[in-house]
Length: 387
Image (cartoon, rainbow, N blue to C red; front, side):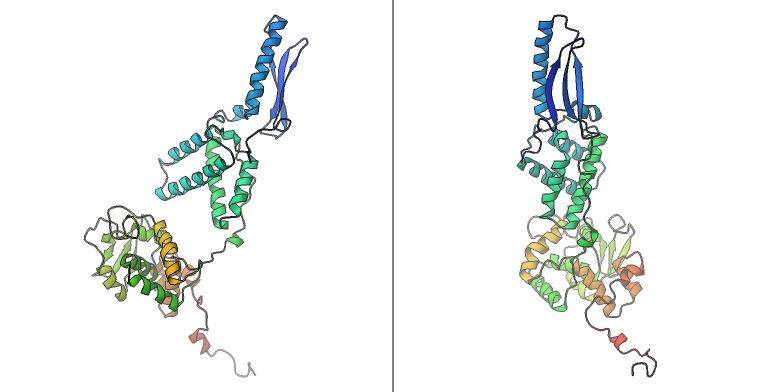
C-alpha cells in the first residue's frame, strides 16, 4: 500500500485557468481544518500581453499540478510551516531534542518506537524524501491496526501514547498541522490484566537448581528479587557498596527506588553465602555490570534492566519448562506471598517490599491456593447454627 499518494478528485483538483475581466489560476486542496476541498486562486492580471499571460498560466499550472501530485498542500503549509521537512529527518530531530532532558530508559523506548514506525512506513512505500504531512489519519489507523495483531494490549497503548507525544511535539514545532492518531482509542484496561502468576515450590526448586549449576550472578539476582523483594530496575542500579553483609542489609537508593525513598532490605541468612561469593571489591561498581552474553558479574557500567527479563525468556524458560505466565517479576510476587503465608508480620513484609502502605501488601494475602489453616480452625459460628 502506498498511503501517501494523493488522489485527484479526493485530495485535490487539478489547476484550471479562468479568463475574463479578472484572470486567475485556481485549484482545490483538502482543508486540514474541515477535511473538505477548498479553492485556491492565484491572480495573473499583472501580465499585460494576453498571449504571454496565457503561456505563463500554463507553465504555472504544470508546476502546481506536479507539486499537488507529490502531496503538496499550501493550506497545511500555512498551519504547519515545517510540514514539508523530510519525515525521517523530523523523527531524528525529535530524538535529539528529547535526549537533552529525558531519562535513559525512556529514550530507549522512544528510539524503539520510532524505529518500528520508520520500518513499517518504509514497507508501505514511504522514502527518505517523504514529507511529515504525508502521515495521515489513514496511515495512523493502518499502523495501529497492524500493531493490534502482534502486540499485547499494554504495548499497543504504550505505542499510542508515544505517538501522541511525537505528534504533539511536531505540531508545536510546526512540522504537522494535526495529530493523525487523535481519533484512535486506547484498548480497554480490562483486556490488559497481567497474566503473571505465582511460582509453585516445585517451580522455585527447578529454577534454583538450574541456576546453582551455572550462573551464580543471575541466581543472586533471582534471590534478591525473591527474598529482598527488589524490583528488576532497582537490581540493575545496585552498586557493590549497597550490600552490607555484616549488618545483613541491602540498600536501595532513593534515586532508583520506585517510591523515591531510601529503603533497606533485610538479607536472609540463606542468601549471605551467595552474596559473599560475588565480587564486592569495587564499592563504586555496579553489582551486576554491563557485559556481553551471559556475564552478569560486577562492572563499572550499568546493565540494562531489560537484560534480566531477556535472559529469563531466552535461557530460564526453556531450561525450566516455564510458560509465559511465569516472569522474572513473579519471584517478587511469590516472595511476598510466601512470607505472609509463613506468618511474617504484614508491616515487616510491607517494609521489605517497599510498599507505600499496608493496603498494597494485603493484596497478596490469600493468593496461594488452598485453605488457610488458621481460618480452618477458627470457631466463630454460634452453636446450632450449622445444624
